[in-house]
Length: 329
Image 1 (tube, rainbow, N blue to C red):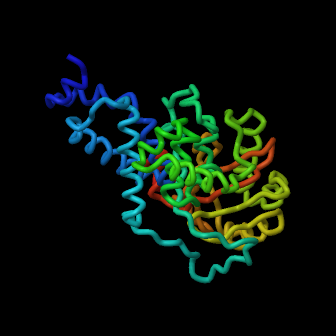
Image 2 (cartoon, one colour):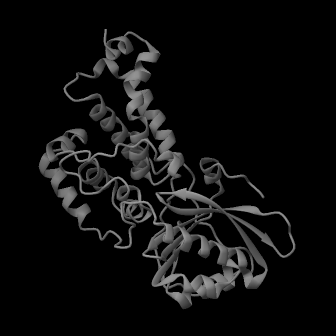
Image 3 (cartoon, rainbow, N blue to C red):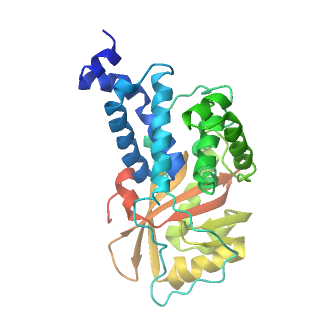
């Protein structure tokens, strides 16, 4: 008696045996679709519940994996269509803190980094003949950020085709649309400019890790000049979902002196972490003589050669449990 037959007979363990090999990759797919580790966790649970309830309707015309991806993708689309169920607010600055003029104003993007521990166990092989992105590229912060700029159905087609490698007819079937419609959505999705600074699909080199650590040490020391020396000339500072973006040495130095370090009154302690296969740090701040470091989100670095080409501040303490970080030091 197969695991599917036993699961249809109500065997919980058999259902677990059926879906467990795909749990982690489904979670990461939901993360790419939604840009949130919290929302991905919720939608994955919805997906598995729907699969359990819908076992009798699984006709085995496709593989279990493809059937689960169909459920997960459509659950993500429902989540996005419902306006995202978590309350969304753009964080402001503390009273009396006025940021300098930004280089650019962005559309708010509700995005979270994903800990590397949640990326372990993903398949290393190319998932299908249509795949354009390798495993590490497809979870880099630049890639996930670009995906979030797409309308939901374009997002789904791009991920099914270019990340998971499904053929055009298969992707159309998964999304209950014609092949022509799916191809049209894919053409529009591919027209989006994906950031050329996205990290290569390989772990940071030892020298890049040293440069990232030196950058973190400069922040802890409040040494803006040392920070700037480790940036590329065209580096970006962004703080999703805040719309302010700063590019270049002068703009980033001005922001850090006025807002990040509060003229020397604010101090940082950074705890090493890893997110999106990139160097990351849990941030803790204290003002003046306060001996306690209070959690202040997560910092993720994008490295180009041995310099920081982007650093992204996520001022969201809801991330801390996913990274195993405490609320205070």
